[in-house]
Image (cartoon, rainbow, N blue to C red; front, side):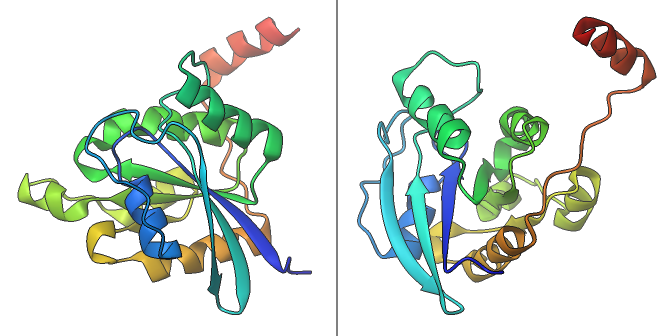
Length: 189
């Protein structure tokens, strides 16, 4: 049965465009700044999409679940303790590799998620292109490219988010190879 309200968290590193996405989706006017730590507490908003109520939470930037800054603790605690229906993991297309560290942690924790690769226009200007379909296949997580400041890709992002919420789709379990898996197994015994 479909839930009437879906709770969605926008999570990712600082300065990847989470607040821009939040503003575009909710019509809010969160202050958007080009500096880390701009969002220091969570912001909440609502929207309707395909007849569904979506509660969106804009979380402060987070780089890792093993964290010490107050902003990151707010984000970590919300994801772990309050368990949103879906996390939209927002990544900066220009520094995708750096942003994927947190993505892998979300996957390890089996958090239902959609990956949003934002600022693809800026990445293209730097000669960087990302194959969404290939990344989606490798990670086993829905991937959507966006240019949030122009509203591009946001309807597709919402569509995939609702799909994940309805199907309770979990990320693929990461396999690290026989040697590492054996060592992990020994640690767990």
